Image 1 (tube, rainbow, N blue to C red):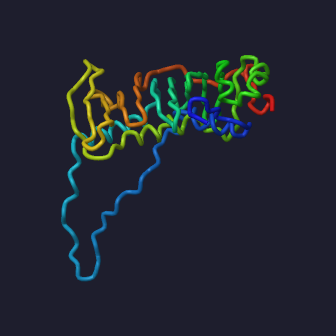
Image 2: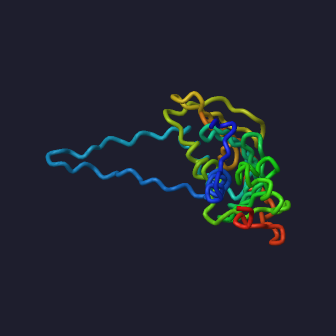
Image 3: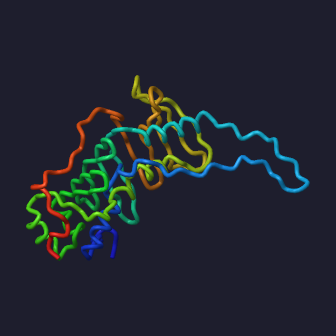
Length: 253
């Protein structure tokens, strides 16, 4: 089976897990802490504790660290980007407000609306996304039963976090090799400094130069992202009305 004709889900449980591996962006808003390196001097017998100074942190490293912190702490933003997941390119457009998200996801030319409220995931698939979500054999019946309503996925869904959750985005901002500072681009409050990696030619990031050092865009070998409207006072994202929701388990088996 090729990536282009692959149906993600042959079973109901598989459907929830597979779609959920792609959709729940922004809900895991904290980067996992990394253990701090030990600063204790060596106490081996007969040895002298080292007095060598720690390597200096470059301005580029400081800027990138500030960008990771700004992204992690952002209360809201608008995201557009894509990530290659195996043989499939997945594109997401969404707004994040207070850890909840609303937007669209596209894969293999098929689109679904999605909304995440905490850990709850709701989908409103287009007609051609139903086979991706539930399998070709059950797609038509499930679409009729949903009747245009949002589909509340099972509680174990954690969809976009694998592709677009904050911890994954933060990992994109940890390149290999030394950082290389480039020119300043943009104008006024939307000016950014361009950084590249000395060893990874496909990695680059633009970090705002005024206010909080938000990452304006970045690209890696497998992903790209553009983020705007950081900390804008958007309306809260709320769950769909109960009358406009059907659960995934209610659909045709």
